[in-house]
Image (cartoon, rainbow, N blue to C red; front, top):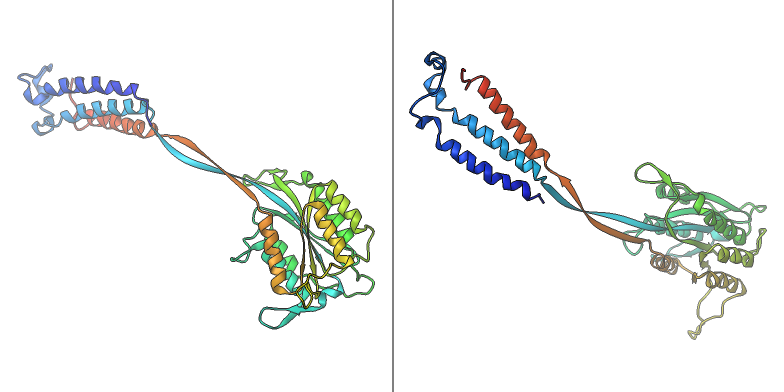
Length: 345
């Protein structure tokens, strides 16, 4: 893109250049110089190149006119605005998580090891059905008799996965139990204070994250039997602080009887189902590797980061190119005029 009105000057430059070259030195009948001796230092061969000075002069004017027209290159740029999700992952590490469940290859593995694999795949993605949570703040809380924050909300997902991989079942009798009421209350309290969190941006500055929703993913294999807060109290906190809770009940329980009829949920599952439904989440039961994976895939699909791309045209000034060429042309003319093509006064 350029400004057109300065280009009108090119017409005048072309006209005067044509007039000047119409009277070029090789066609003149006489030379108007003070003395013939002044031309003796300039060989006949050099005189034939005096037209170069005129070419450089008119070239300089042309380049300056193009610089005045302010040429620009237009580039389409895009800005990606993301609204991530703050996710607190709650993992049961009570002694019952040491029990084995079936794997697709026919072997069995402890619930703890399978849960760790699923959490890792949920965070980082598996290249198949789980795409990972690159844009989301994720924190980790584990619980047995007590709830412990293993990682605050962070975008450092690789460090978080390293923590997940080191999780172990709590087998100490004085610390064993299931206190997901405390864990859920702690998670919701952390999410409620999200506005106080400062996250480093791409330019090095820190600011509060732009969060679309607050989510808790609770994995447990038992009923709440420890802790200070009852599940109903934790559910009330989740509702108050706008936290959506997804609950996964992991165990060996059957979902249907031998006739294919759905088995009513146990009292423990009813409490978990109430927590999920009252906060806008979902409750799912899993009894093996495949069913647990499908639950995490469902949650991953339900909670997606919103990405909005804004495109805009950014001009880039290019006037410096013809300006630089004009300066080079002018300096070349002055250099030749004062040395090789010097005309004595």
